[in-house]
Amino acid sequence: MPTYLPFNLTAATLALNASTYGTPATVVVNRAAGSTLTLPDASGSGAEFDIVIGTTVTSNNVIIQVSRSADIMTGACLMTQDAGDTVAGFETAVDTDTITMNGSTKGGIKGDRIKLKDVAANTWQVQMICSGTGTEVTPFSAAV
Image (tube, rainbow, N blue to C red):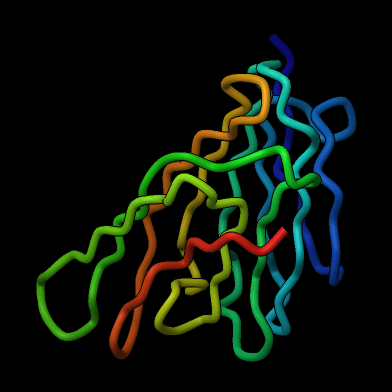
């Protein structure tokens, strides 16, 4: 099995592709002004993307979204809270297709990690472990 080095993302956009970045692919987002990452069509291929926030978002958002309206994300986010030793948990809805991290209440802080796997036709499985500040809220939405 080949070893793929992490890809350093400093651009505003990235279309993820297993044949270009390998699978599992690690993408380190190092853009304080945020980036938009678009997943390939979900087909059940088993492709995996591991997104790591390398630089805290200070303006705009880091957005991870599906490529078409037929695809959804299913899974959960565990977010540590800055107000104490507590954790907030958020689950996806039946129509979730987008993750938005703002560097504060929705995650996007250096060290946050998002794992995505193409598990079935039209379905990406997501696992998030991240940090939040202020009053934490879900990073999941239906926006595509």
